[in-house]
Length: 101
Image (tube, rainbow, N blue to C red; front, side, top):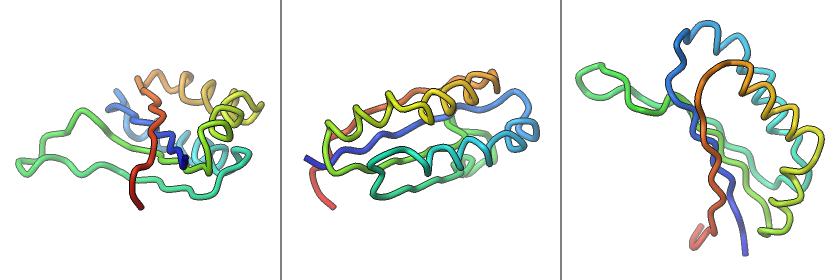
């Protein structure tokens, strides 16, 4: 079954500092093995201008759960997790079964 890994990156304490690290993070995400599609997004603020809980998302698509599981054990994934951790910005990663495309 097609699988997506979604990284939800919460609001950084220093958005400028985060953005200076982000290009390397995004570059590593594009290098995951078995990746078939990559999508990155910056979350819009609420209508009143206040931030939402999330700041950015990264969606990584794979042909199967097995491919996604293997990808997160690759050295490039370890680098990405280390880079995200170094930003001191909380994040979560979710594996999802894609039901429709």
